[in-house]
Image (tube, rainbow, N blue to C red):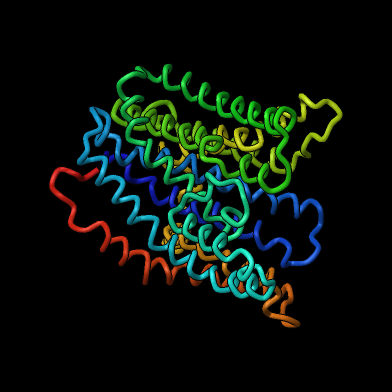
Length: 391
């Protein structure tokens, strides 16, 4: 696995790009009216989460393939979960605590705590346990640190990851088999979305926030993005051990793949959504909303991991790598600032200029949180790693 370590810095930097895209998405109303074309691009930041899911499956397979390829024993499984807990939960709980006071004050002023206090505290506990993506109701989801729903989904992905790795290693032989499985996972994810939309729109109609929460947050519906990353990681591990593969042999091929993938991403972000009149065409368009990005994201990740490209010179700059390492903290803590803006806490001073300053300050704060909080707590919770458990 040592040969595969070089491109990690470039992929780490891309995490910041994705996290910053999500940040801009959530700040969009704070900047005042935007030109339609720019607003469309900013709204495309929502697909940064799809990138995270695909990259997560890829990186975990890359790092932990040898732990589970031959079998899933209790020792490795529990240590893997401990490592993931140490990676996610300190900052996750910090973000929840930062976001809580503003909501409590606002709900208390509205009389909601006096009326439904038990409901809000139960919802807070559900969020503290990272289970909110399974409960399609406000205030369980879309209330306490809203973007953290993706951590709830990731926890489910981590629980099944060792068994996915075992199944891929044992049952899928050859690059052709992995390519076919990747396509099957990709199409299966879109088909599952189509079935869910059909059932929840026309058979058992669900409306408003519950429908939105199910279709955007539900871990089962988003799992194909993570699974595609796992299959991609399995392909990469095998190709590295076999000498590098088709992309590793040619920088020109890697560059062609990168250009194509970036063009496809931009095309879909700025391509208008289908609104009718054919409801089946609308169903397909909505069902493929996230899945359509899996292919270009996978191609981009694989091309950058396979060898040097012109992008590496930028993506491997220490400052950008540091921002990538702090991207999880940025993703988690930024919502507490967005909450204050939405609640108009800053009053007359709440101007686009102030909001831009707050955005940049949040990026700087994420680095401080990463270095001063995330890393120390991660090391403390991981503990001394037993012999034989190095990925």
